[in-house]
Image (tube, rainbow, N blue to C red; front, top):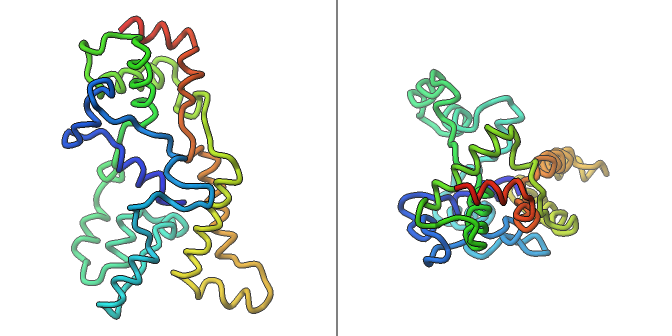
Amino acid sequence: FFTLPSEFNEQWEIKPKKRKMNIWPKSGGKRVPLIQSSFDSNGKVKKGWSFSDKMLEVFSREFHNVTVFDITKPSQDGKNLVTYLFCDILESAQKACEKIATEEEGERKNVAQPLDYDMLATAAADNNLFNLTKFSRLKVGQMIQNYHENKLNLTVQDFPLKCPEVEKTEALLRLSIAKERKLFPERYSAEENDGLNSRAEERLRSLFEKRMDKKAFCNIDIEKVLKDQTWIDFFESL
């Protein structure tokens, strides 16, 4: 569950090389789906995404010293993800570690437009609320973001949201725990042999709850938003 939102965003992010993500769906472009459509009721993520446990099996056939990088650990240690990779995981990367340590945090941020704004833009276009020939798809998404965040002083989480059912997200958590057991068995074995609840599982559940609090698996409820007169007026004014 930890990497699912970022993998989903990477797959659907609007970039110049992604032609069908830069043109309106009415002209043959692709629509961004709901993030909850990327995993099923059993918590299994869509076919085509590689999981760490499967990749470990593949690389272990050829290499004897494969290290699994737990991307949840840097936040626990109060470290930046990139710094942790170059300074704690990779061998013989001292120069890279020193360079990264001197950079400002803001220089390494990967800032992308939330996909929800594009979802709202394409839905408004489908409803003929503005003239598609006047603006690019990317531009309308940016205009929505600017209006919502800077004029209304709100965030994506302030929209009406459409979220997956609890049973579906719980299945995703159970599958994530099962996969971590395969990757880091030493985190679970000793405590479970003593009949104790695993601190590793409790840690993972805590991270999951933080993701749920941030609505990481939710998207804008487009139908409700497009019934809001404020947004109807916004699009018609474009």
